Length: 324
Image (cartoon, rainbow, N blue to C red; front, side):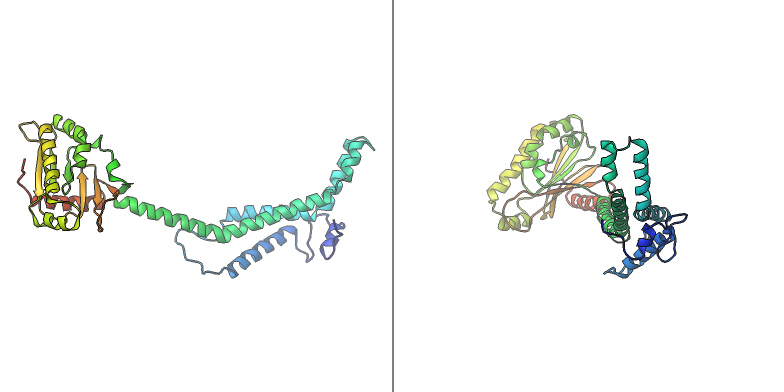
């Protein structure tokens, strides 16, 4: 280790009795407080972006955190400044504890304890300085980002969206359909959903629960428009709808006619499955062709659930006469 030079060399050469003083006459504690204050001022002066006001948080350290950091800084400074004194104590302890001129004593006395203690002190001080910089600059930005992401997630959750299924065909309705008190299904003409869930609809009818289904009137202007933008023939549209009716007929054998099929005459913006617990919304594509279409689940009691529930209720009001 090179010999100490400058004002601090006087400290290392023996001015360690009583309160240890730095070159300018301050105690180590005062020096640490001065350094911490200067470090905080330096951080604030060199920030590249203005500090955004926060109502619930502050960039300033709490008193307890500041006290802890100051204590560790003092410890690092003390280890650095008192390294000669501590090294001498360690060497005296080795001489007292081990036999004179023994191999172990000789080996341990050759170690440079002063340098090791100084390195530990410098490491401690540097580590705390970096921690202070993080607390003063990076922590607030990190917490702000976390709050932003959290609030965004909370906003989506409060709107009513609880789940998104990227392929609407993979939604599992096995528990919802047989037990829901209310079930309303709206689509254009596809019979696929009814084929996948015919067993659940059968259980529902067996339990005496009513179901309302809306399908597109194949003779309406809306149906004619869909035929012009989708690769579907009039024969196939009518065939799909007949498949729906024929599949539901044997399921609903009750004299009460628990399944009501209504024909709507509008181009739906979305197909849906509504219960008193949630609505599954399947939006339609703007472009032509086929692809997997995602569906969004909206939980009951949420703003989006109320919006779509009101829209579906108004659609049903215009089609009161069931065809079955």
